[in-house]
Length: 166
Image (cartoon, rainbow, N blue to C red; front, side, top):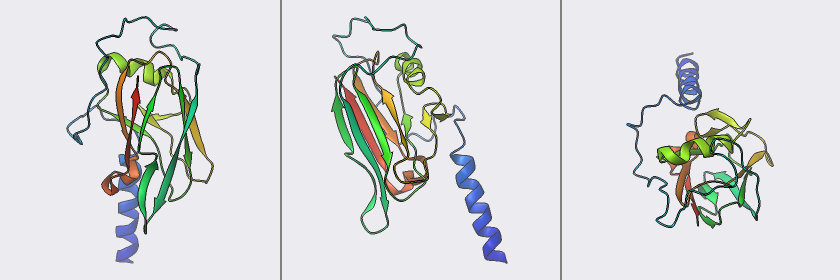
């Protein structure tokens, strides 16, 4: 009985931790914030805060979890062009999500706008439980820079990735 209570408490803790953002950035993981490039003119294809369409290539990132080989995004690091899209697909080891971290204030509104109906919390996608579930996001109208993200349930297992927008 005691084990069941402990297991239930641990499960609730994970779900609460994955339930959204508190606005507290004290849990910094040391990742680099996305910053606009020096050549960024501020010109955009859509007004900031409005969802921008994918106008280039859509790249796939697989969300993989396996106790034997690890929990990871494949590829872990991806370089794309502004206007490209990224499709994250849950392969194994659920639950998985994509939660952006340390995003510069100027880029935050556009990332949020490009995640319509996908957010579980600020800059965090929904949880995906079944193989082939996932979401596609545009990086249209997003400033050049590096955008780091993690899988919230598997952060302790170092499941992280980054998108570099050129």
